[in-house]
Image (cartoon, rainbow, N blue to C red; front, top):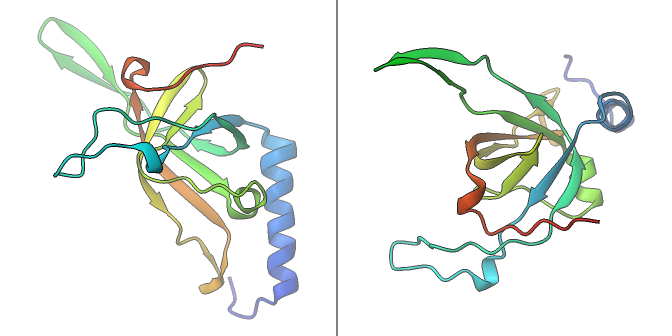
Length: 152
């Protein structure tokens, strides 16, 4: 992509990204943020309980890796490497939320914990044109989470 991208071009790209993610792909995930103010950490910076805010519904693009069969012991098992969730930065700014390491994403009745966030998705190599956030996750068990589902 050329370096001669104007503000108007970037806003057009943002509009197209939002339209694709929200209207065309339309995959909804729920983000559960950790309540940092009430987390009791020990001297190592660890905590046994991590209370979370109520979930926020967001639209995202999801990149599933291929599952890999593994022969261990008495049969085959499948390993699934981490799933990537890609969020449009402008959508996150509109709802005033930002995914952090340790937050939980619910998708397809599974829960994924965020291991890493990558923000460096620049248009035309310019830092002011940063357009999305990629969250690298791993599948986690619901039993270890402090999440209460609301059924309506």
